[in-house]
Image 1 (cartoon, rainbow, N blue to C red):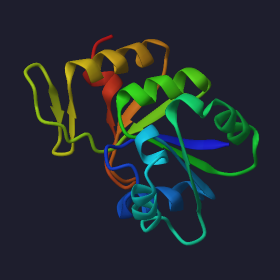
Image 2 (image 1 turned 90 degrees about the vertical axis):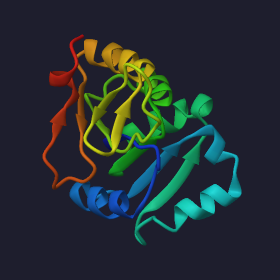
Image 3 (image 1 turned 60 degrees about the vertical axis):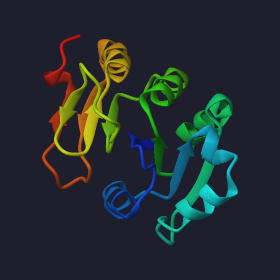
Length: 160
């Protein structure tokens, strides 16, 4: 079952690998990113951040539907990670029963009209529009780098 759905521009890194996998007793991490799924160097690099007893799988964004459905029905505790909000929306449409999305780092260059939340999250107007579509359907979107941080509710910050 998918325990946590995370949007993070760095995908998998030490902080995420250790803290979130411990909190949710994660057995398996699914990274959905077409570029990474087709780049052996990126996959090897991301595997270095994976905790020893956790499996790591990579999927292309357009062809992950069956894997997502199988994972949701499995007994695994799974963490699903995407890099950006376009991918998050695409994946969320495949698994709309997910009720919460965690936002990690989004460190893009700040454009006019962007919303900066703390030092690690900059949401461009296009990101905000996608978030509004998701939140309009009753999905909770929260910002936290690690579980021990105070949760920031995007639903409270952004009017839909």
